[in-house]
Length: 356
Image 1 (cartoon, rainbow, N blue to C red):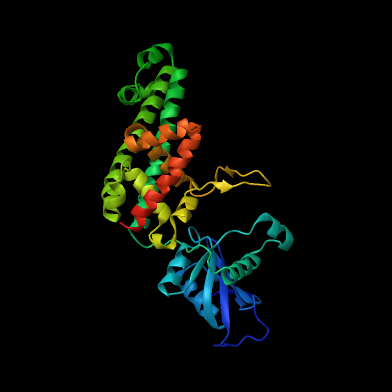
Image 2 (spheres, rainbow, N blue to C red):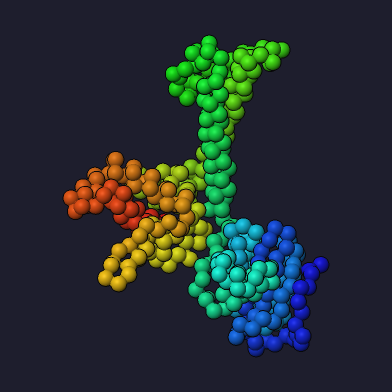
């Protein structure tokens, strides 16, 4: 049963009153608040983060009047299930950022306060970000890429651990394995035959550790390849136009599709997409000084994908090479040129994503 945190003194349904809701999401519970058209708090209440709780939350909000919009903090994590449910019920949603530190210092921090702030933000700023849809093929792609990225990261850790262990290995073993490429080193370590009954001796203990790490590396490589066999055709099915662009492979295309989301129409302009990817330069002018600074915000994974694409085109794409040469003669440094190219690529990617 939902837990009431605050109840209005004279609560009655008013079909003519317009209200907005706000939700502060957590793992097990969601705290909702409702405000009227003037931003006055009507009530707040806590509900379980379950399908039954979602239905109860929506029913509770609609008892106060005509529900205009619901602001949710954390639509990409704890609020994902609630956002899916409200979308299925044709309820307008707004993605709310966490309150800044200055606001929290002045008002304090609690779930009802955050929910109230979310409701007011949704009411007064209806053009806030529209949450990503998380019920289609792009969400499936995100899950597969999450597992693959984790395996890639773990494999890199295993490689570093194996090479670090080799530095302190007994001389004979170190000399035997020194100078091998990573691939050959993994194969050689996986083929070691230590004596398990002599695990108390440094040489055999080192061989056991090296063989274990090598087998783990091989297992992770198998996982990565299996996941990639699911990812590549899925990316091609979602947006073949994007995958056909010069230098865009399944990895880059997959990340950019995830950044745009299942509903890329929520990104109204290519400038907004560039800002989302963190490649739109930010004005930093003051007085007679007019300049722009590097944008360190946005989706850093998308920013990295555009960076890799830029490097690929600088190496293989004649038009990009000509542009870089022209900017060099104009006095731009290589990092500045790369930032310009990333911005242009964001425009090309946006067109491909919104017009597949």
